[in-house]
Structures are given as structure tokens and as C-alpha cells.
Amino acid sequence: MKRAVIRLDKQAISPYIEEISALVTSHLQQAIPSEWSFPDNLKEAMSYSLMAGGKRLRPLLVIAAAEALHGSRDAALPVACAVEMVHTYSLIHDDLPAMDDDDFRRGKPTNHKVFGEAMAILAGDALLTHAFYSVVQASKHHGVPAEAALAIVEDLARYAGPSGMVGGQAADMEGEQGLTDLDQLRYIHEHKTGDLIVFCLKAGGRIASASAEQLQALETFGRAIGLAFQIQDDILDLVGDESKLGKKTQSDLKQQKVTYPYFIGLEESRAEVDRLTRQAREAVSNGLVPSPERLLGIADYLMHRDR
Image (cartoon, rainbow, N blue to C red):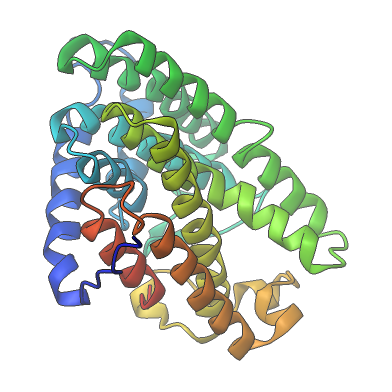
């Protein structure tokens, strides 16, 4: 018997999102052991971007997925911090002159504008490397079985690497030289953005000892909301409020980037976000995930976000 789809309104899920964001931010401040000695400038550059705020969406999804399967929040936190490090490194590098050449991120000057290009590159390198250290702490200090931690490390390397996020970034760079169809754009969105979101859902599942069927449900959820999230970004770049986004709007137009609205129009893009969100909700509403309410609320929240 199909389980009824549960809906949480924005007001119901917002306190949970804010709680997890604050918790992750607090743990990120302590993510690097205080006894480690390395150059202050590197430490400041890492912290500048890591502590710049943002939605903390990816850590949120790790923790929400673990809790949806009655897993431990404490055990999920090191992995949640790890994925935020990987995400932050990707933003630092994306903003570089050789990539997107952006001056602002989250309402602040981009890392290379403050610390210089060389230190920004090194800060990104350091955050990416330290992420794997953080994942291991879930096993060393929070009882996550070594086999599960190993699977999370493998997933992180896969979904963040050449067949995942970095591959999507490379395709995006090539696409700027002549993207011709929607399939190419979908590939970029699914890998540049979606793969790391899929990782988050599966990592949370692994922390909670998910079955193969539960992992598949979480992956389907992640794949659908990952694409919906990026299409919504395309939409917000056209019609969003700069003061809420923390960056210039219509940057895609100025850089002559093609987007979902370019190919299928604004209203069809909104309809696709709605369709993908319904698909995501259905994936975790069939009884396989015992407590999907917060995942469902997050899916709805993301569909209606304005930043």
C-alpha cells in the first residue's frame, strides 16, 4: 500500500534548517585540530570562505537523510562538515579568473580578491584534502563502522571527482565555448551540482546503516532535487533579488551562458522544478524511509526558495 505523501510548510521546516546550519557552522569552526601548525594566511583564507555563511544545504541533507533512517546526528556531523569543505573548495576555485571570474560570493569579495589567486587555490586544495580527514572521524569517534566510512570515502571521491562534480565543471567550461542542446546542459547540472547532493543523501543513509533499497530511494531523491535546485538557480539568476542572493543577477546572460530558461523558457523551467520536486518526494514516501518528513519539507523549501 502506497504511503500518503506528507507535506511540511516552510514555517515548519525553517527552524530545523536554521538549527542544523548553526550546528554545522559551530563544528566547522573546530574542524581543524588546534594543535596543527601551518601558515596563518592559509588558515585565514580557508576560514574566510568556509565561515562565509550560505545555506549549508549539503550538510543539512547528510544529517536529514541519517535522521530519516533514525541514524545518529553526532555521527553524521563529521561527514556533513566534510561535504561543506568540498563544496566551499569548489566555490573558491569556480570564482577564480580562469574559471567564472567572479568578484563576489555570498555578498562578500571572493577569496582570490582578498588573499590573491595563489592562496585561494591553496585554500581550496586544503579544504578538499581535509574533507577526507573529517569523514574518517565519524568512524574513529562516533561508531560508524569502518566499512561504511570506507564506502563514504569512495563515494565522495567518485561524486566530487572527474566522473562527478569536477567532470561537470569541465563540461561547463567547454560549454561556454558553444553549448548546443538541453542534454548537454542537463549533464552539466547533474554532475556539477547534482552529484554532490546525491553523495549527501547516500552518506546520511550509510551512517544510518541503510539497506540497498533505502540507498536507492535516497539517491533518486537526491538526483531529482539536485537538478531541481540547479534549474531554480538558473531561474533566480534571471528574476532573483540581488540583495537576497548575495551576488549579481543576470550573470548568466552577461557571460552568454545558456540555461534552462534559455532552452525551454521561464514558465516551463518552473514546471520542471515542480515535476522534479514531486519525483523526489515520491521516492522517499513509499514506506522505505521510515521518517521522511524533514526530507519532504526540505524538498518543498528548496522549490520555493528565493536565494
